[in-house]
Structure formats: structure tokens, C-alpha cells
Image (cartoon, rainbow, N blue to C red):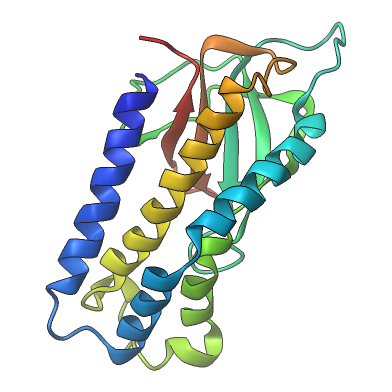
Length: 216
């Protein structure tokens, strides 16, 4: 798994979600309004913000040469859920990981791993591009969309809208991580040669690779 494959997957998912959402004729007007926010979102400013933010947070990811520290299999960025408190992802250092079959399209990372001591739920990365989705799903507005016993995933266009936001942002997160690695910003982090940066929602099981140290 390399960064070219990751970048291609993220871009393809972004483009597909945007294209498919635009073909839906019966999407709720609030979904349409939220999609316009995505179209106008300033991802250039987000890129610059994230670059500075990760540089500041690196201090929380470093083992500082402690004898107990182990090389990291991965760094996991985990947010709460797409429905609530999604705009910030905390960072976790993953060690002793009995790796599952890695897939660029996302995979269940399982539970056969440990957290590096002192590297658990520390500042990770902001996902401010998800704020419009979080606003859309606030308790004050969600009743506009769903009938009793109905799930949001059943509403036409909802999952495509979520994917459009998520993958649009992850393309930028990936680019920032590549940029910082080229600047040797991660030199003090003991990430294994094929170590990964991952992102996923809390207790969803599914994580997406968003950066790889591997040159393969």
C-alpha cells in the first residue's frame, strides 16, 4: 500500500459521491443547501490550518526516547461519529498490532493491538470540513428528514452527501501528511517503515488509510 494508491482512492470516492449526489432529483432541500456549502468550502485555508495544527500537535505523538516506547505500527485519528462531535479527531499510537488484511478502500482494524503508553486520545487533527454535516444532523433539524423508525441512511442522498464531505476533506488531510513527511516533520516519531496513518469513527470498526510510510 503506497500513497499513490491512497490518493487515487480518496479522490475517486470524492468525485463519485459528488457526481452521484448531483444526479439525485429528490434530495431534501436541506441536503441541497448543505451540498452548496461543500462546493464553496475553503479547502485551501483548511490545508494551511491543518499544516500548522499538526506541527503543533507533533509534541503529543513523540515518545521522547523513553525505554518503554515501541515503534508505532500506526497512528489512528478517531472521531466520535458522523452524527456528533465529528469535527475533531483524537490521536492514538498503535503498537503490537496483529494486522488484518490491509485494504486501501478501508478495513476493520480488529482489536489485536495496544496503545503506546502516553499516546492515547491526545490532540490529533481537526475535521472542520464536517461541521456542516454535524449542523445538518443536530437534534433541532434531524426530525425534518426522518419518519418514526426510519434511519438517516435511508433518506435519498444522505450517505452520498456524507461521503462527499468526508472524502473531500480526507484528500486534503492526505496531502498535508505527505507534505509534512517530505519536510521530515515526522522524523522524531518512531513509525515503522510501513507504518500507516488511519482515520475512523469511534467503534465503527472501519478505518481508512490516509498516509503510508511505505515506498512500495
